[in-house]
Length: 220
Image (cartoon, rainbow, N blue to C red; front, top):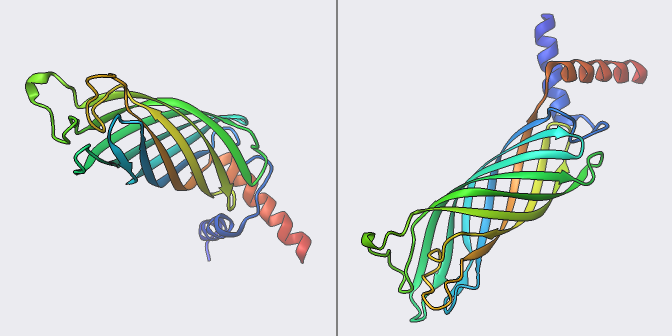
């Protein structure tokens, strides 16, 4: 059995069963994952909101032990009813960026605060639940701000599960129907569940393999 095969096998084994080491948000840790979410519109004048589902992909990168960057691409829905009781779904795609403060970077449970913004492409709706006339000049693109809190649970150094709650303040009043009287911008809550896998630089993998070999020697 070749040396390279032994290293690959050891890496796969460590990625599954390794116990957490010192810092779960170490510098340069890069994660790629999937995201499932649910949105609930707030306010909206005379409309009644209902939960909408979504899905997407997420990325994370640790700048330093207590500070990180995250991003998320999502395809989402917002459900609501007009004043006449007509059920409407507003579809949107969004690309979001966050700066996060990791409050417990050395724990299996890392609580973090997140702030940022994003760009959404959505299907605007008037108060009747229909798309406004093109002549109205309403854009299908919208910039929005985000604030939130979340928790990472690190299964091991390579896998984590994340729960995240966000408040999204949009720049448009046409997500859940126009509001010609108040002119209030729409906002919504978003909760998401993420599963993420992490990549490391070669130096870290070498140290992790050496530590595993040392533990194996001590256990003999």
